Image (tube, rainbow, N blue to C red; front, side, top):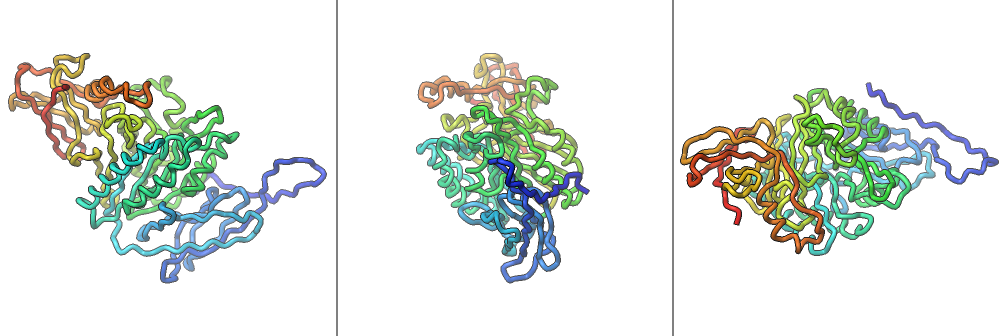
Amino acid sequence: MPACKFFYLVVIFISSVNINAQVDLRNIELSGKVLDSKGSAISGVAVTDGYNIVTTDNRGEYKLLSNATADFVYISVPPGYIIPVKDNAPHYFQRITDKSGLKQKFNFILEKSEQNEDKHVLIACADPQVGFDEEIPMLGGALKDMELLVNQYYKHLPVHGMICGDIIAEISREPKFLEPIKQMFAKTNIPFFYAAGNHDMDVDGRSNHYSKETFKKALGPAYYSFNRGKVHYIVLDDVFFTARGYSSIGYLDEKQLCWLEQDLALIPEGSTVVVAFHIPTYSPEARKGEYVKEEMNKVLQNRNSLYKMLKPYNALILSGHEHYNENYQLADNLFEHVHAALCGIFWQAPYNSDGTPLGYAVYEFDGNRVKWYYKPIGKDKDYQFDSYLPGADKHKPDAIIANVWNYDPQWKVYWYENGAKMGEMKQYRGWDPGVVDYVEKNRENFRYKYIGAGPTEHLFYAEPIDKNAEIKIEVIDRFDNVYTGIPKKIK
């Protein structure tokens, strides 16, 4: 049973006490039905106000005790039903606009899916971060690439999307971009779900409580869940506004944790659970045990509490924020993907800071099993690494270099000299020569002069015996897919 329970008290205000700001905690009873499009009841559907969760009975009915602080009543779309879409985004919620009525009804209608969802596809990206008119067509090119991929490989499968935050460059400065971006993602005919990023928060409020008002007005609740096939999806808001300028930290407040505990209590242990949010739980510093070097705005501060809650499940964490691509095997049951930014270095280069090309992740689900790959925009899906001839990296001038963007410890990176397999390349931390060269040649045209290449740990090197030899690099991913390439020369 969940440890967290919310109880609402009826508060009687004494008129002789002069208090201007009072919290209205009068009990409100929310009730209604969840039905299919033919009027049949759907039982077992989770219904929530963001505090507590109840499930519908065999008549599709629910009753939920709430109060005037709740903004929405919403459902966790069950498996086997089409994701409802309205106003260019998934619409599984209703806003509570009348806070005076002590009894309110909200009904939900769902349409059964004709497709078997056990096999389905998730397209995940992070940080579109559009802030200027000229960036809209650039985003359009990325979305066109997604459409082409789906039409080529997944035309007969259910496909949905996830955006791991930072939808626009600054929601407080340029909220006008939010609706056009929603429209662009909707035109792909892929229902995209949204998580809130630090650039999606309102920074004119006095506390975190008010920081997602614009987001919620456009997209609904900041945390929620839904189901497809045998997979349970959860979207959380881990961007906590400190009300100090634009500052935020990675943090899940108790309200969300209590809600999450109830949500997971409805999911059988051993199930596959996907959790999406913006700020990663982990970092390269943590991987090396250098926890003191982690920055509060770059990692989830109370990550261990989340890990503990996810322990009974096979869980994937999807995050973004860092504008680089990283993978972390956090436990036998827990894996985190930090997604490179769809905008790369803020739409100023065809790379992210670590050399990962602009792109997105594709997750192929088959029951409880999942495979994934990174899809560079405008490239074949088998394009999984870049490589360079000696002289490209000034720190390793005699070495061939490979940047394997989606690497994790179960991958292998081999090199061949004149057709002979020479062994595995050595991993190191450094800078991708391609992005370094691009930045050096184009920085004067960048909108932001301070941005550029950043270090990464998914680089590999080897020193050929014969500098004039024919070199080939072979990369094998964790799913035994083999990718090959010939190192190139930096011009």
